[in-house]
Amino acid sequence: MKTTAIVTVPPYAPFIKEVAGHPIVSGLRLNTVMPTKEPLEELLRQLNEEACGKPLWIDLKGRQLRTVTYAVPPFTEIKVSHSIKVKTPVTAYFGNGDETATLVAVDGNKLIFQDGPRRVVGPGESINIIDRSLEIAGYFTETDLKYIEAAKKAGLHNYMLSFVESESDIESLVKLDKDAVAVAKIESQKGLNFVGKNYKSGRLMAACGDLYVEVGRPHKILDAVEDIIAKDKNAIMASRIFPSLVDSPVPAFQDILAVGYAIRLGYETFMFGDEICMRRESILGGLNLLEHIANNFERKSK
Image (tube, rainbow, N blue to C red; front, side, top):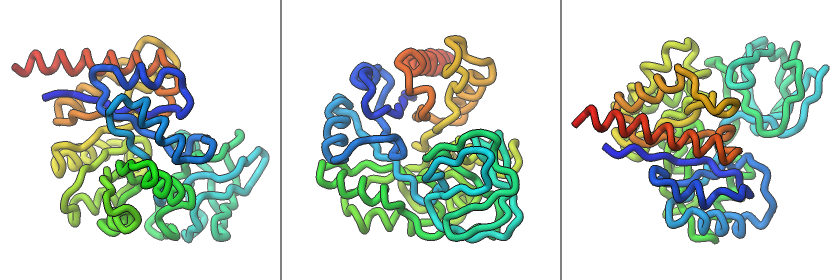
């Protein structure tokens, strides 16, 4: 067993090469909601060079609902990345599920709330609406399509697909890039249903940031991550990896237990999310901690 890590890179960070050179780093990930300047092809070539020969994964947002404008309180309207249909009133979740608001009306991609979050909601924030009546129009966003074209021009073909819920989601990427290598991010109950019934092949990711919110009841995340690794022994565990290191050099007790549990389930690759990767000290601390936990488990397993 060899534990490795994929690290999210702030596009213009001065420490990318240092992180890419860490012994357990197996690849870098660009979250395409991060602000960048065009041409995108030039940015991708630069990041690929800084990856030191390791894969650069381009994380496309797919049907993930994200805000596209600022919403400043007091407000009742938020515009999102896709037009949707859903029976209202319904609860919407913000901030990794820590905040809620009541959605009372929908007009295409304009969501009208009775009581929006009492803070500024910025572009790129995710919104979770957990209801069987939810319909999201389309899959790829306009930004996704721009990145696919730029990646092909740069000779890059490694993608992560958000909120995969059917084989057709993966096929839609291959139609646009015949050389595409895709990781299917499982982030919803529909995604879990796909894994359980119709998943055929390809690499999976337990994308726990949204998945934890979407499973409905918190304890169901245990079954979710177990089902994913059971289907794909090469699955990636992502997000919520050592979040305590964002604010403190000392990791929280529960962070260590969570990663140790995932390793014992069989997860060998972990992807660090956005916040911990924004500072050199926090991401290097996270990589060192993951390496120590994995090495200790491997020694005991021999």
